Length: 55
Image 1 (cartoon, rainbow, N blue to C red):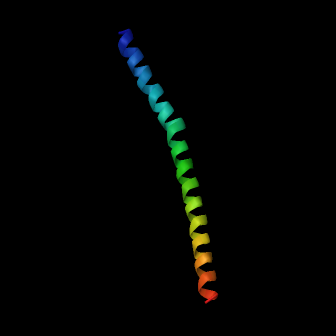
Image 2 (image 1 turned 90 degrees about the vertical axis):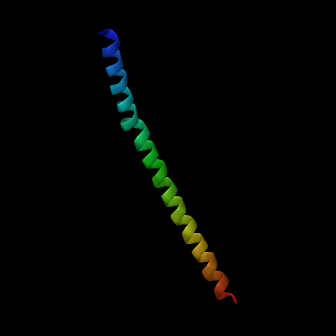
Image 3 (image 1 turned 180 degrees about the vertical axis):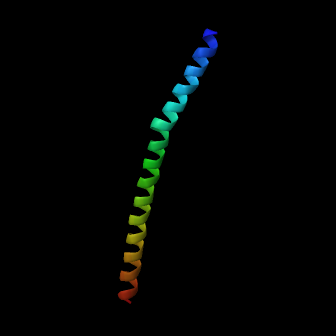
């Protein structure tokens, strides 16, 4: 009986860790990657426009 109770508590703790810490961290990293990608896109667009205007 004690083994089953501890297994259930372990599963609940694992779910708490996944949904409380891991998923928010992953979404934060994805948001950071999206912002960096947008900044890189703006830089590439600016360099392209400047290069075409100088010709």
